[in-house]
Length: 118
Image 1: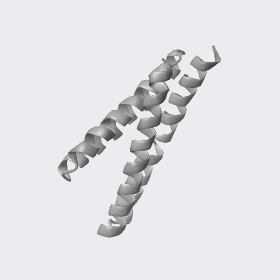
Image 2: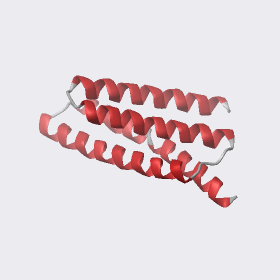
Image 3: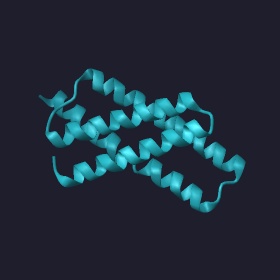
Image 4: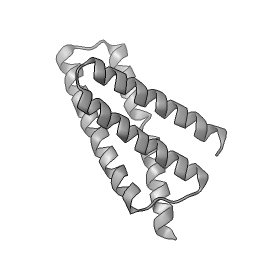
């Protein structure tokens, strides 16, 4: 696996751990665990893609669930930011964290697509 694949995996781990800790501190433990599982699925997809391996139907379904969980978390974060009037720097941090998850979803989808093409 190339160095940039490892760098992105580390970045995903940091985003997942940060979201998990934040969720636990805010009292939303169920959503924190779901987000951690979703980021883990994205990380697995990144590893599969860079290793040149495909992913099966089970991974494809897990990826769809992970994307749904992360989309729901994104909408919840937006509502919280509007209600609690989070500072612009905090909003920027939330937006960047969510934006950095998109390549993971794309690479996981490409790993799934590679398996389907075989």
